[in-house]
Length: 336
Figure (tube, rainbow, N blue to C red):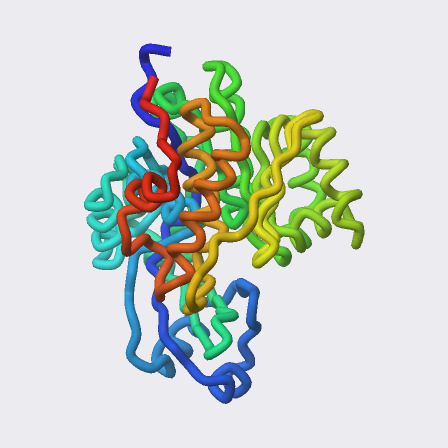
């Protein structure tokens, strides 16, 4: 595959994250939901933003965070996601490119503003995310560039993008092009509420188009409508080539056919903010997977990257992830 230029191409919501530390009284006053992502309208976004204490404003979005992690690991990444032609859109594009990720999706010139996610982080680190999707939802099939799909080993799709029919069509175009060019397709289920909204569509997508499925324990059980984790894992094993499921402090379970790897969680001195843990697990896993690493090594790279991200505020790495991988005795395989 001499025309491969990228290890991973991400497709997702282009969002600017606004993070602030809050107390539980703030959570209760504003009726926020811990451990969840809730969709809000522009009016609610403006009101909540005005109530937020001082914090950080960082370019984010689940798949974009994953791609920033891939770059930090020394991988080659590209991203497709829609922003508006406004200040936050320029900030998003600059931040992602500065992280080492290729990004050239045309901005939306007429329509809603660039998306933002307001993330309230209470003392127990169980973040409450409230997202105004804005321009990010207006991605269409036209934004899926065939030359980028062809140039990547793995196409990584973000479940959060699935709220509009246009985005679903874009997903299916990306998956179709990936199959035409012999590329792998990965999907993250993103959030339990996301699974509940789109279960039937997700089931069809997973069964017919997905090679690598990412989920946490709650998401995989919701997808298959069971409270039995092993039963959900068995169904995933039957439908996809690889399923990588995170279980918080229990680590991760990766299954592929009759293979199974159970990887313990990385030890962290203090959990500060769980925002982006799944995103960075996917970054570590996909960097290894795209370069032919075995399942256990992919999983270990994932938990190391996730462990770094939960040790500080924000969903972008503060440390050089490739150095953490090497310190752990692992090696990112060379690019093909």
